[in-house]
Image 1: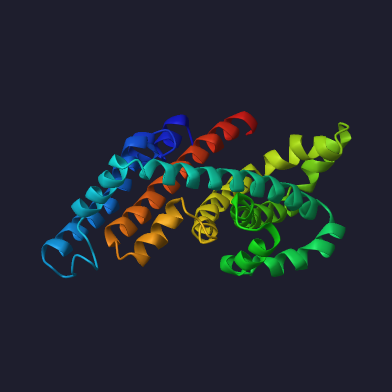
Image 2 (image 1 turned 180 degrees about the vertical axis):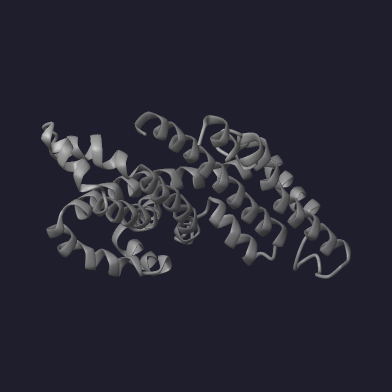
Length: 270
């Protein structure tokens, strides 16, 4: 097959064969479903399918957000939640990377730690709450620790599994050049499993946001999780929906930032 035939097969003609490779196309398609949901939401409230208490209109939710902004209450909720998630995520991801590497590279560590960590992974997030309160009292430490637990398991699982399947010939070649221990891990093995590592990190970040709500059940007076539960208790469905929308939007933004880091790392080590 000559070069013209190869281009005609699709890889050379990215404009025809890979339309989804263009950022603006993907961004446009990604906006379709949210816009349809927003339209259906507005139509549902306009037609009176649900009462205002059951489902406030998008305008009412925006008004609730504007009210909280004017009172200076919304940004503190957002800031403390983002802070808790980022600290818990960074600590949990670092621990998951370290323990995952240990278990993935050592059959002894896998036999010793694997069953216990696998069992702990099945424990629901809310089950940790009373124990953390008992051990750490009510405060930031217990909240961040719960988020750390949520972030740890996805990174641990993906890293440990991926490292077990690194090409042995690649590892032996690196050892022939004198690479051992941490240098072998950081120079050869982790770059070889970079896509799996970032898959685990993105799962961990999503899990951190999920665990945030449980964390802010621990006698919290600030945060989006607190706003969510406080709005439910006070019958403020508009604020409840506002908290849900903010969790979704901020969660997606943080995931997009992690995606940028992934692309940089891919260019750096690929």
